[in-house]
Image: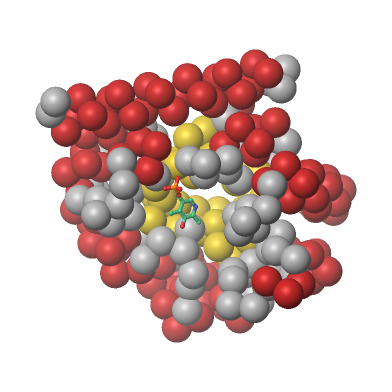
Length: 230
Ligand SMILES: *Cc1c(COP(=O)(O)O)cnc(C)c1O
């Protein structure tokens, strides 16, 4: 099978899973965007995916993301930065990303804002919230739920940044449903303060059904589309 055919098959199977999960939840499948996570895979795969109709791609490492976005600058893709972010790289990420999903501390806001202003273009941001139990939170990404609102306010008021919603990763080794219930509750609290923050990015290859059933508007899918990472 050609690489293009492999990707087409992975994409079609993922679209079918999302559509089925949406139907099971009484939702319209068109409400849900698949962000294909292309980390570790070459720009040639990104080109195939764009040709197959993918509009949103995700990357989690700055150097790799920057190079791939430059390589594929001729394609009409939305680049989502979904990885851990060092504050001294934030402005550079704002130079090529269309969405930064991993805003998890206020120290990132200044750099992102500066980068967006320099680029002359507003940058969509999601606040990444931790769903981990307290004993697992160390070293994992995501703002503590108690600090979510303050961080969201800081993003929403920063020049050049647009608060679009929330992102989260399910805890390791736990059932994702309970975590995504908590995420849905936090998303509702956020929307009460910031009605425009309607994006909910949750769900990966292993747990997209649980995320769609709890209101995800974006699922971030790597392996189910591209295969195991090299
Ligand atoms: C790698 C990654 C994904 C995709 O994971 P798969 O299991 O390959 O679908 C989603 N979200 C984040 C934050 C990631 O780093």
